[in-house]
Structure formats: structure tokens, C-alpha cells
Amino acid sequence: MDVNELKIAADTMWTLLAAFLVFFMQAGFALVETGFTRQKNAANIVMKNLMDFGMSSLAFWAVGFAIMFGVGNALVGTSGWFLSGGESTFESLAWATPPLTTKWLFQAVFAGTAATIVSGAMAERTKFSTYLVASALISGIVYPISGHWIWGGGWLAEKQFLDFAGSTVVHSVGGWAALIGALLLGPRIGKYGKDGKPRAIPGHSMPLAFLGVFILWFGWFGFNPGSTMGASIPSIGDIAVTTNLAAAAGAIVAMLTAWIRFGKPDAGMTGNGALAGLVAITAGCAFVENWAAVVIGVVAGIVVVGSVIFFDRLKIDDPVGAISVHGVCGALGTLAVGVFASPRLVEAAGVGRPGLMYGGGLAQLGVQALGVVAVFAWVAVASLIIFGAIKLTIGLRVKPEEEMEGLDIGEHGMFGYPEAFLGTTGISSPETVARAREELRAGTDAAVSANGEVVTTSSHA
Image (tube, rainbow, N blue to C red; front, side, top):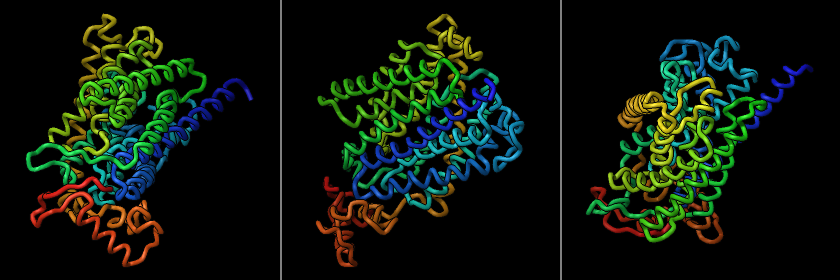
């Protein structure tokens, strides 16, 4: 085996390892969403996180990969359906040495990440069948089209838009789709009182949520350094360092911001602060110096707390903060590249211009802003069409009584935590299930009048 063959083998193994790390992020998302929501919806949450990866894998194999990376035009790829056509069909990925199937797997786990972001913002009231349809369409069409513009040689790539690992390509796409879905769904029953003020609906397990945060932080070392798709690239270590620094700064500053705002170091805000820092640094992890990564994380930590409060006041109910973490901080991180892009690093990458802080003027920042706005507009319109069509046909939301009793039993015929609802034995029978469902409807979260108005609330489950 010659040196070139060894390089290809090493690059392939590194890219596969990174893909496996990013795949494991699905477990992190599942745990974060489960912990931040109520136990009566736990099985539904993990089912959605499992199945959106299944749906996105098939959709991305059939059409998404071709749309995103296939030879086409400035707007969309038009060749390579079902992973056909060979390396020449996907010339936008020719810069990486691993074989095509390895490249596909690495990109497929990214598509799954974009799709699963939507789950959290629409949690606890979305029909399971509806979510499966939306997941396939987002990962098979919506995500790949804007992805083609940036990573597939499209019009934003031609303008040297910089998004190394996907603050906009992946995270903002998922965040903006989540925003439209949450808007069309409406808030959970009991979330807002008659005076319009938001009520806290605590998640049932902060340990689960924080385990998810740790897994996501771990998986991000595949997400960002893995986007080199090459083990022999010296910048892998630098990318890992900027990734870690931004996450640490985001967590610390979100904690301090929440401490000042609420009088306590809020755990949920702190966890989301770490994720906000990770999302924000994803675009510029290969283009900014260490100190700039810390600054980006600091700003993300402040912004994510303010953003969660902002959307709550707009009555956009996002149980896990996905819109703020992924949509808002994804846009923030993308714009930050236009401010902090290092001349040394963009020259080494062979693409882009120095940021505003280095005397580069508004050139790169302007391109970054154009990309943020364009992707937002595309995803918002496409998601409005998808979720709007679903709402008018099969419906987006479960019935009020099903939402009250929890989606576990209504959508899946089971409880994620049987002993919590069926008694200490956890033994299921028609009688125990019927009694548990009746108790959940009557007093778990709210008593709902005939016209759907919330008249009482309780914090159980």
C-alpha cells in the first residue's frame, strides 16, 4: 500500500468515525427532548427521534443527496438519484478522498440532525404520523435544496459564503422549520393563562436532559472536526479546540445570564447555553481564532436566554428551546464568521475573505447576512407549505383529550413510565389503563372546558 492509499484509508476511517459520533447525537437529542418534556410523552419523544432518522436516511438516499450534491445548476442538483452515477455525479464532494458511500453516510447523519431539531419545538401535541411525513420532506427536499446552495456548489458557494460545518446549513434549517411548525401548531394546553402570561411546564427529568447535553457536546467533536473528511488535515485539532471553547463559554454565560435574570442559576438555560455555543461556533470553527470562539460562545450564551424569553412572550411554545438554540444561534454564528474570520485561516482554506475585525470590511459579513436571510426565507416558505398542507389534510395536532392524557398512550398504546401511571406494579390491564387515562385527562395538567379553555392547572407529570 503506497502513501496515497494509506491517506485514503485514514481519511475514510476518520470520516466514518465522525459519522458514527454524529449519529450518536440522535441519542443526545432524544434525551434532551425527553428530559425537558413530561413523562406522559416520553415514549412518543424517543419514537420520533428514532423514526426521523429512519425516515431521513431513506429520503436522503433516494433524493436528498442528489438534490444537495448532484451535478445540476446554481439552485438544485439534478442527478445522482438513489446514490447512482458514481463519483463524477457528485463533483461538489470531489475535494474529499473517502469513497462516495462514506461521504454519503457522513452527510446523511447531518440530514438526520436537521430533521430531528424540529421534534423538540413541536413536542407534546403533534400527531406521530404527521411528524413522519414532515421529517421525510424536510430531510429529502427542504434541507438539501438550501444545502446545495452552500455545500453543493450552488449560488451561495459561488459568493464564498462560509459555513464550515452547518450553523446555517443544518441548524438554522432545523430551527426555522421548527419555528413554522410551532406557529401552526399553537401552544400546549395550559401553557398560557387567561391573561396571556406563560406558565412553566417543567420537564420531568433534568438528569436525562443533561445526559443528552453531554452526548451532544461529545458528538459535536464528530460534527465539526469531522467536516474536514480527512484525517491528514492539520486543522482537526484546532477545530476541536474552538468547538470546545465556544461550548464552555456558552454554558457559563447562559448560567450567569439566567442567574441575573431569574435570581437562580437555571439548569435548563445552562444546558441550552452549552448547545447554543456549539451551534454558533459550527459555521466558523475552522475560520476563527481561539479567542474569537470564546467571544462567539459568550454572545450565544446571552442571546439564547433572551431568545427563549422572547419567543415565550410571543406565545410560540417551544418546550425545549430548539428555535432559539438552533435557529437564532445558528444565524448568530453564521454572521459571526463575517466579523471574526481570520486572514490566516481563510487563506489556508482557500475560500472567503477576512472578517470585519481584521479590516476586511463588510464584504464577508454581507455575504453571510445574505445567506442567513435567503435560507430563512426558503425554509419558512417551504415549511409553511408542508405544515400548512398537512394541517389542512391529515391534521397536525392530536385531539385535546389525547394531549391531556399524553401522547404515549394515545399515539402508541403504552406508557413510557408504566409504574407512574398504572400503580407500583406497572401491570397493564384494560381497567388500570382506563383509570390512568381518565386521571390524566381530569387532573394531570389542566381541566379543559367544552370550548377548549384552560380552567385549572396542576404540575403533576
